[in-house]
Image (cartoon, rainbow, N blue to C red; front, side):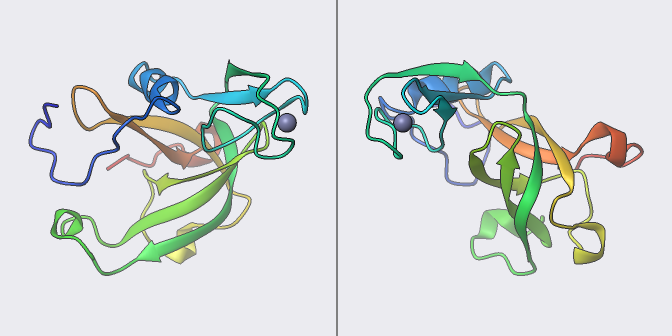
Amino acid sequence: MPTNGYKKPLPAPSPETKRYWEACKNHELWLPYCRACEKPYFYPRDFCPTCFSWDIEWRKMSGRGTIYTFGVHYRNWHPAWADEVPYVTALVQLEEGPRIYTNIVGIEGDPRHLRCDMPVEVVFDDVSDDISLPKFRPASDVGRGLQPR
Ligand SMILES: [Zn+2]
């Protein structure tokens, strides 16, 4: 898999997550949707984690959500992150319900600039020819003027 000089660990799509990563590569966020519960879920797997139904399909998500919780990382635990500290990881609550573990970008890694329930929207970081990572930035109506980094 060509990495284009990307130094961080890369996801290895499995049969259950292949559809998810293919959508990310197209800059779309798709999640499995349980027809029995009528809800999407994360992370992708072949059966619903709530009711264990195997009656699932894939649906495109809006890409909008809010920060459920976040952490600001001041130390890099892997050399590839040395130039990025402080950086922000977060659980983002998607508009459709599921929570996704991700990075918040386009905002200074400072708790004074972040808050729970802050509206965010997905952006895709093309880290290799095969992998685009879904990250989130402040929603365009609140983040105007901020430069993604
Ligand atoms: Zn279900």
